[in-house]
Image 1 (tube, rainbow, N blue to C red):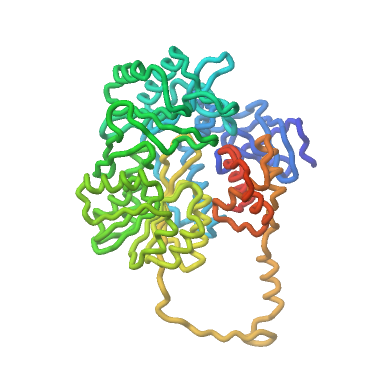
Image 2 (cartoon, one colour; image 1 turned 180 degrees about the vertical axis):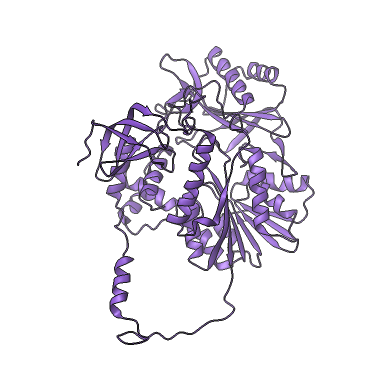
Length: 554
């Protein structure tokens, strides 16, 4: 039967997508239903149907899943931050482990048993040491902070977030009050007018310190003395108040220049036995307890005995590099962000690590300059390794590669590339650093071993004993025939049906290029990007990535 729009069907949710959306089979087709749990029996109204996908919403929950719970957050169904507030944490871990395993098997073409499991967090509340609150106005004109509604710039007002630190919520409230009292306007992304874009609060789990940064679109702010006094009085652990100047027209949160309004320019914290000073730009894992477990696994997978040279690409402020240096003969860290490299160098001196060097360079270009590397560690952003970095790794051919990933799909893509060029996936372990969201970290160990000897085999085709029939080759060729090509039209239809907006072909091409995917199927789209054109918004980037995952492109 044909699936009909606006018709209500009774179904049972059978699984989750990569972004935590539940789906069910209705009339033989997969239908995506947000905020559902595996095992839910519900009446679903079909809201959109396209050639390849369909989407629905719950009209009635007939029989709830055993995994379903009442969300502790009152705006969990509106905010774009958490997608798993409605299920138990045990169910969330099961979904995340399956997500990693599916990526490694379907995209990475690896044995799923190489994934040893997932390590859950001890707490799922107030675990984040970094909060970035967008600032705007509600319909009544009141200044609000919170988090963006999915795929929009609409802010869902949140005064108490269950995964952010309570200090961050408190300080954001003081800034809101100051903006209201002194008529400091929030930045408007539509009109490109206003002042305060974001409130950025970072806290130190071990040091107890916290730092507040205002991201402003203008150079001057009124009544800063009053704000500083109020913040200091409200939070004694505050060690620095900064202003970051961002006059860009896009969605990048931090600008290039940061000035100190009061206190220290750096936040201090301890991780894996080392002390770190962190600038607002420096990368630092948001879940301290889980980060220590994650990095301990990376060091263990590196298999160091004190005689190795280790190269750490995407090193940030040097957190993994210094953990590796304690067990290696020599460690080298590479990062493209200058502020992070300065942090890393200072952190090495501060911790007395004399066997460490840091370089500011692109990961792929820097990797090509080194030789004699025993262990390579990579911790790339969500887009994974770019083509230059992968090529450099294959040129160096280090015996062991430890890959720390925050995106199972791009991890699996890179694992497939490396394993296709001589590496073997030895083992993997997932870690939940982001409870209640769909994100998950994974550590993978890859090994490379050159053949000790070669065996020469002569093969004869034809009929008769000891020969290989030609027709059997044809049958195998038919069985392994490439899948139907995923077109840009299919991707655009999927996005319009699921998200309600259109994306330009050039946007899809840009995202594919950033993910290191081949571009031969859309040469015109690539050429278009050479002309002045706005880049896709974050929500459109995520929608395109979702479509690429759905069609198993990544």
